[in-house]
Image (cartoon, rainbow, N blue to C red; front, top):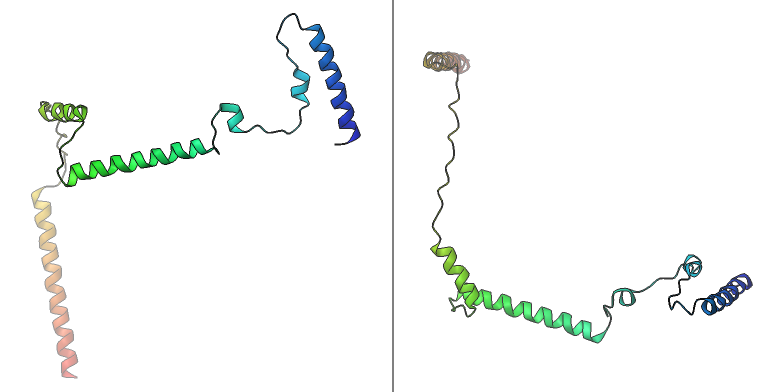
Length: 151
């Protein structure tokens, strides 16, 4: 701590003692100057919210939570895969109410038919053109094979 910091700290303490003497009648003391000049101090989450994150009790609670979670998952696995009966009456009541529920009909409108300008004659024309093109291709390939074989 430098001398300037010590001087300011002493000044704050003196002002604080004077303010305390003058405000003793109200019982509430607000020292906003101290908050403004407190520097870069940090407060832990434990002090702020009361959660003892690094204590033994907190780690025990976390381990108990993990054990309980593993137990519940194991119980669910046994119920699903091994067919063990469900001991929880609330789960049974929910299951029965879901299974006894009447299915609701969902009515959806059919999409309108798509109007096309294609006629069956156009399709037949494309098919005939494709067959004619294939015939011409086979004839040309046959002539090319004959020329190669004659050489």
